[in-house]
Amino acid sequence: MSKILIFTNQQEESLSPGAQEALAFGSRLASATAGSVEAVLVGPATEAGAKEAIAFGASKVYTINNPLLSEYQVELYVDSLFTVFQQSDADTLLLSFDRMGKDLVGRLATRIGASAITEVTDFRTEGGKLTWVRPIYGDKAYGEYSTTRPKVVVGIRQKSQGPAVPDSTRTGEIISVDYSVPLEVVITKLVVKIQSALSDIRLEDATIIVSGGRGLGGPEGFQDLQSLAELLGGTVGASRAACDAGWVPSNLQVGQTGAVVAPDLYIAVGISGASQHLAGITSAKTVVAINTDSEAPIFKRANLGVIADYKTVIPALTEKLKKVLV
Image (tube, rainbow, N blue to C red):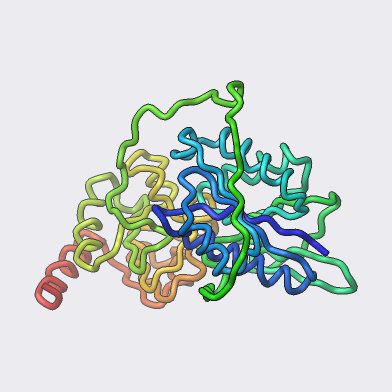
């Protein structure tokens, strides 16, 4: 019988979509392995969040309320999660492989002395053996992996799980953990938060994304994309090349090393379509590509392709939509 601990981070007083996905995955895993599901909330952990975790499948929820954990700091989160993992006596730690998860998985595995596997989308159980499934070769195939250590930290790929359905009638135990931050762990301090995104909508939550790449030629082109995104009620994204060039903040990056997204509509403007970028939009329902290069790989993924200069397409499209939508 396995014991599964799930890190369920919150957005305000609700669980993040990634946390809900991790709980859904954990519940399936527990059913297949005769295991149990527990959860941990760190920082401004609320009773509402704990009850929500129970509704999504946890039988026990550990909460840590400490003022120093009110803002994400990787060293403190690793230490607090390690403390709860030890207390819970779990053998599997699950968490969403989002921006925070990418920070935490390797560090937690090292601290615990566990195996680590990321971008997991599924699992297999055969003959009492558990294997983890993750996409490989730019999502062109899937690999199955087994671990050699008794404990494992697993990062669940974003948007890879079906929608979790809460059961408000479920009951469970909520345990408040008395956690004191060791002084030697506090090696960084948050001085100020700067809102650098072009929209209040998180890429991972957006239903419409207008992304720009190297083909825009500079940061000015993102102003046109911003106008179109606002008109559609969406948000702006970018390729790694555009972020590395300093045209937009890195938190707008879409792709394997950025945000993995699943919008209803993804408009790729001046993006060639490297495999790392395509891996981030696998679950997008409709992809529209605008590029001057007719051989760009993005067209193989696109549902609709426009071979043209974005400077003629985007302004014209924006003006047309204003007449229809405004």
